[in-house]
Image (cartoon, rainbow, N blue to C red):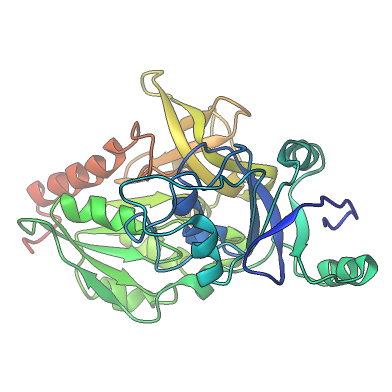
Length: 368
């Protein structure tokens, strides 16, 4: 049931019960386990537009966090069997084991078209026989996504260290607003020792540790509700520390320099979004998961004259990437860690390494 009263009926799938959240759709054909375990989906009921979901089962290796983060899962068809040499269990048993309420045999095309027309909205999945009027009242009592700070709720409670793979080259701080494990892996593969920081880590504590670079992760919720990290971003930028942000991190970097963010009608979620790189016109096929965007266009970012757009979405013209005009600070709205794919945008991690190497050659960084 959606908050406007529209109902889509199906069969119970996964755990039984009632789940509430913002109903959104994802256009990926594969990678459902990465979707389920992406912390950016906290507080959301995700419907997959591809009709057949669960055909290759589930395993521990493909998780982007320790457990599913979605509020609930909506699919059209679940196969009677699953088949993959890496599979450890069926998708339904995986959802049941983690208590994720789901529904199948839903007309997900009709649901998606409705969300595209009206916008993402609050909703519920229920297999408990709750009277419709009672369920609608419960849905309307749920908080709206706009103004909601969910990032702090999914962040790590304590700082932890991710060791580099091979020789240690740089010491990087990563603010965890819902970081995906693959982002940390790609940094570690490039010789970074990563200190993963809780969302509320004070600016002074970050500055005194002498990091070579700063990574601002993805995460759920409204960027306007996450204001405590903006001072840290500005302070490290003032020191010319290389900074790279993705998704929520992109929005926070933009806001730290005066830009505005706003809620999209239904957001961008899936593995097939075309983005044009302004420097050379190359089109990247990107993985995305966000409901908010930075206000601006190719001509500039209102309120943030120090920033310029670097990437634009070819579907709706929204800003997909920005960079500082003078300092080594850049970010993208999409997910360049791209697990399970596509891998068009992984060069952005190489750019952070190159920026840190340039800073070290200028004497801005000490050898870690």
